[in-house]
Length: 464
Picture 1 (spheres, one colour):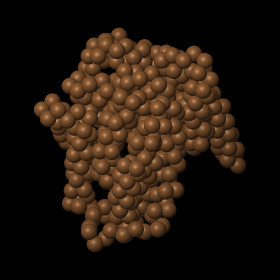
Picture 2 (cartoon, helix red, strand yellow):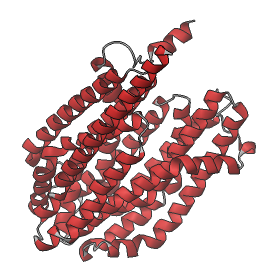
Picture 3 (cartoon, helix red, strand yellow):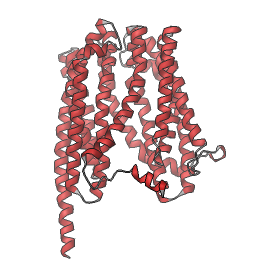
Picture 4 (cartoon, one colour):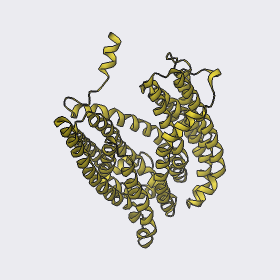
């Protein structure tokens, strides 16, 4: 009885009672987890920016889009693994749970080894294709090749965490992340300041930290009390049916992430054309943008969860209120955080670098992009509400059009004519406004049709 009460005390009744407090308690921990992870990731940039050189900072910072486009497909597959295992757990299929767990862990190893080899092979040509500055490309290649040595560990952590989340365990993956993050920061300082390893130092520290997080997750899975998901050496075997389902569920999410990264690669290529100082400045400002965006992302996840439950319960007015509250809270908190960063931009940027040329570009990016970062909520959160009522394709298509196609067109038209760092940065807010209007209008049209249609069917059923 005690255990049941304890478990229920952690549940959120999303379909009854006041919404605001529940939404905040659901969203803020999600935002905090993402921000903590980003702060650890930012340590690489901060350490080389402060204790090495602007070229080293640019080399580390310019690799983000390259890493994302190669990794996102496989992290999308980990989402498919999470859904698949959770479904079998819900159905009480213990044998299938165990077989699926062992299959996806093998898949994570295979994915990691594939990415390790691919990263070594394509790092130099891909960086040259992106017009990486000559004084940066050698360091960038070195960082990327060392970073990809840790791909098997990154995949093991992602898929292992997905297995733990499938039983509702989000604490242990976070503990692994915190432990590896502390090690990463400590080793960054040791390798760069004491051993003067610069780019190779932060890359090596990252690989070691990734190994620690992966090994901790594997330890939890091999010693797990729940036999259904406990790993056993003798049970590792690829099962075709599980692989097909993981790819069917997870591949669309991964492909969407890859497509989204294409626009960032195009923008990064254009940033590279301004030289290493611009690359370093853009990478510095991006750290603060991530923090603001994670707030929107947290309310995005909250909106889809609350909307789904209330839509299933037939509480359509409550669905509308969920969207309004998530938009209000997400956009206001994001705006407040963004404004704080912009007002104190000179102070915050100098955490990462003291090079005035780099600071110049960082401040341009922050003032042109972050002031209306909150606008992303109008397509992210509203799109999540659309997914909550069963329409997932439309917001994805509209977002890809507004955030990918439009940005590419802008680069090859507006930016080509008015070639300045400012005109390149403006593409972000303009694309956000266009996408936000499109997704918000589609929500009002679809939700009105969905809610009124279901209400009329219910009324007819009552008459009969």
